[in-house]
Structure formats: structure tokens, C-alpha cells
Length: 264
Image (cartoon, rainbow, N blue to C red):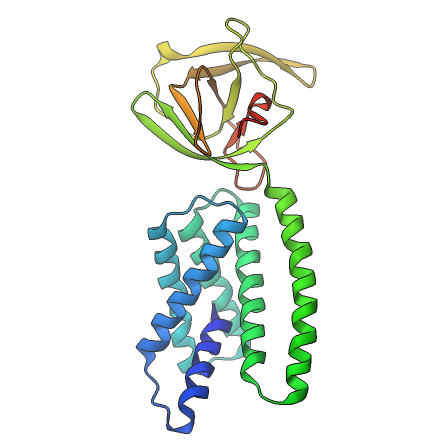
């Protein structure tokens, strides 16, 4: 992001001093590297399914902030450009599910960017008192960071990367272990996981399962999956319930069955 781009510029300047020759390509690729680290950090913290290719593409887009340093723009326009580039970065890297999903990705991207950039900027400054401030600030930041990570961990500890095999299709999903999901089909007592991702299937493969929720009776379309893999654990004899509406949990497109608790 722009703050780390500015830091890249200052870092090179601190090394070469007034004799510095500005190589835009050097700053550009350094910024790409830093943006890749940021996106990777967001991906790990929020348990996003993002390929290396998408993260690299998002990093290249973020590298465009390099050129803002050399354009005479007012602060408001610079801020708007940073927001726009940030939105494009997270959509390219993590995809778009809904506004909340995108906002969370963008929020953590900027939060981590300013945190890392701010600490690095302070470290470049010299002086005894500055070092004291850095040490005290570092302790404070670590305290806040640990609390924040714990909060995030509590929110995302039930997130799992799921590989679901159905005939010749492989669905890579982000699942949430829902202890409230106790759905079984009434015929063979097979557990049902809920998926809101589109999948190709034949009508004759559909298994109709009646269910009741909030005093409302309905029919759930299900498919028998070949296997489900979560954290190296393989599950057989499960049904996949097809959900028309998006699951309203951040970044989730699969609700796992409560029976899986303890097994993953």
C-alpha cells in the first residue's frame, strides 16, 4: 500500500542519502514484495482461500501506488486512489462475495499496512529518546496486537479449508464448523453439510430431504458426495445440501456438520 511504498522510498534514501538516484523499477518491485507479504498475512489471519497467482496479481496492482509518489496530487485525491487500489487488490486476491466480506479484507489490509509501516518508519529515525518511544510503543503495540489476534482467533477458529469431491468435480470451500447443524437425512441417517456454491449435477441424483427450522417446514435438495477432506481427515457417507441463499458468515460458503467436531 501507499504507506509502505513511501517507506520503501525512505529506506532507499536513508541508505544512499543525498546522492541517491531514484530507480522507479526498484521501488516498484520492492512495493510488490511488501504488498504480497501484506496480502499473505490477511489470507492467513482471515483463513481466505487465495492462490499464489491471485496474491501476486493483487500485489502487482498494489505496486501501482509507486507512481503516486511522482505525481503532484492533493491529499484527498491520493487518499481516494489508495482506497480504490486497495479495493481492487482485495477483490482480485480474495474474490468478491459481498460488501461485508470485501470490507473485512480491506480493513485488515490497511490495518496491517499502517501498523508495519509505522513501526518501520519509527525505526528509521535516530535519537535516544526516539528509541525509548519505540520500545514503549513496541510493548504497547504487542499488547494490542495479541489481544486483536486472540479476538480474531476466537472468531475464526472454527474456519476450515474444505475439499469436497462430487463425481468428477472438486470444490474448494471455506467451511465453518456449525455446532447447530445437526441435519441428517431421514432415510439413511447421513449427516448433511450445507453449501451455497454452484455445482453441476443431474436431476436424477437429487435426494430430497424434509427439514424443520424456526417452525418452518421445507425440502432441502441434497447430493451424495464421494468424500470430504478437512485437515487431512477424510469423511465418507455425507450429503451436500444445496443452499440457494448465501451463508451469512464472513467468507464462508460451507456449513459443516456438528458430527465433525473433534474429528478435525
